[in-house]
Image 1 (cartoon, rainbow, N blue to C red):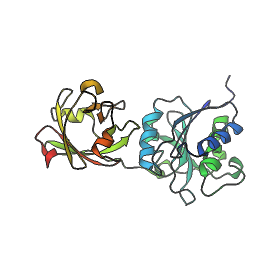
Image 2 (cartoon, rainbow, N blue to C red):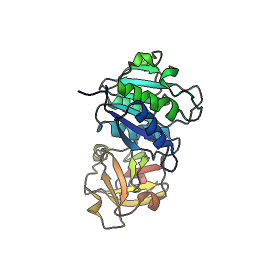
Image 3 (cartoon, rainbow, N blue to C red):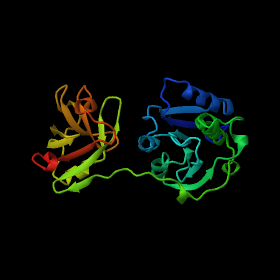
Image 4 (tube, one colour):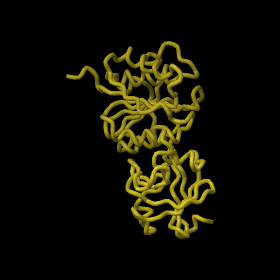
Length: 278
């Protein structure tokens, strides 16, 4: 029989691995709940990029066991933004700042059924720094929840409809092409876009088709392939990525470097000879 309500805490942040921040948060959790499993989703979210954190968290939680999902991308730390706990219909509990970083994952877990502010000092570290709530507020909360502390002990209830959401850009169809944007860039330089293969199929573009793609003003003819190997090494290819979106890649290279792209870069994509050349 399990000792704890949850055996697992997942952890996502923009802390990186060059400092002690991640390790210290692990230590805090383990002192409160010894033996708890901690899965680091990533600590490579771009600094203070709440939207990127929200998307990566949402993409990840569907593959995680039920547990406590801790996310700290918190440019508003020390301000009046709320530290929150959100109980989801799927059964997992989210912990983090109420700035939108939890919003997409909550939806992915069938929505929120309850939310509370973290305000009980007995469930925080004795001294709370204004600049490190990940260590002093959120990590202790995640550990105490996993141990089975009732959520009502953390603080006052807040309406789930008041939780801060986040806007993710939708592609815009204009004549025979989409105006889109880069949602995420992984460590391989693959550019995930906010366009899905069924949307390209509406333009008659399926695997084997050629696409005309303009990224940051650079026009490219790119095949839509089933995998990276649809092109020779060093060549551009568009594929359906592991989350069901269209990504631009270079076989054994970096599309981000090749195209000079960044998060949020504008993309125009359509068939050859389309408005992508405008």
